[in-house]
Amino acid sequence: MDLKDPVALTQALVRCPSVTPEEGGALTLLQNTLEAHGFEVHRMTMREEGTPDVQNLYARFGRQGPNLCFAGHTDVVPPGDEKNWRYAPFSAEIVDGVMYGRGTVDMKGGIACFVAAALRLIERRGGLRGSLSLLITGDEEGPSINGTVKVLDWLAAREERLDACVVGEPTNPCRLGDMIKIGRRGSLTAEMVVRGRQGHAAYPQQADNPVPKLAALIDRLSNWEIDGGTDSFEKSNLEVTVISVPNRAANVIPASARAVFNIRYNDNWNSATMRLRLREKVAEIAAEVAADVSIELSGTGDVFLTRPGPLVEAMRAAIGEVTGAAAELSTSGGTSDARFIQAMCPVIEFGLVNRTIHQVDECVEVADLVQLSEIYERFIEEFFDRE
Image 1 (tube, rainbow, N blue to C red):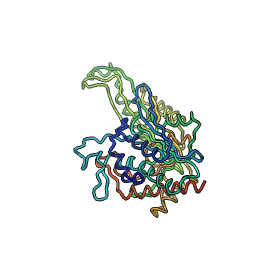
Image 2: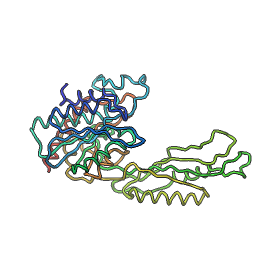
Image 3: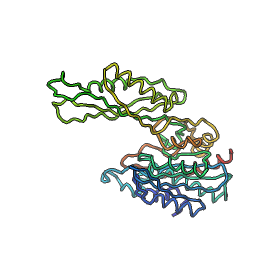
Image 4: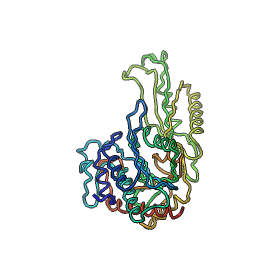
């Protein structure tokens, strides 16, 4: 196998069944590949009580700064019923110029493209003006507890810094070169419980039904205009995702009712101010509808924005040279591990076309793998030449 060929390397990675949190051989393949080409590779298993162990990898070529990092994940979501797939989900079959398989786009293809680009560039130039590193986790598609966050802590303990980072998540909606992600909205999840008093449905005066009160809370929160957006981000929004009542009997008024919702917030807020405003809003509505409410909040990453500068411009230039496209700078979409990395260094996201991620018959154009690897190779040169 030619390890400098992103197509062959993508196939090899996809054939490793690394469904979260299983390593599946993917990190071992990368370790062997990188060590054979002069990278110093560290494999680490991160643990936390109540969560599965997760294997991660950090590799670096060179010891001088700046340290340009490529971040990604080899874990994938389950394929579901394999009978629904046109080709076996871990076969990486290529048919009519398209490779099928779980992880082809999200995001083993991106990893293969960067690794192949790095190996070609190192072979061609013999060295770099700085260092190249890879931070590859095995739980991005899972709870994201024993992956990137803990590897970043490990790096900090070693006093090893990242100076800039590209996360190779699929960012393009239609064509390669459409979009670079330069920021993400923050994410806050809330579990809200309304407490009532259980009773017989025929005697409502002897009970306190929490369901109508929860419904009123949900209605008002769903129609809450949190803000009007900013120059860099769209409006913040709140979406109810779970409603449940611990009751199966049709003639029993329940003692409680529960809802879960998620807020994606822009840079009008940070984690602390959004939490405070949400609690105030819930308390305000609860008083209006006479509801006894408790709320628990959890966040999976704060809002961030990487403003145009050397990192962004190097990527835009590389995309333009290879594809001719003028990439849009965007903060749309969900979250990625960039939300953790941004605390250490400027970070952007650029990868493949995201139309089929997490779907049956996830697939990638072989030509896109070749072109993305060319973009990454040109980007690395652009980045170091600008330093």
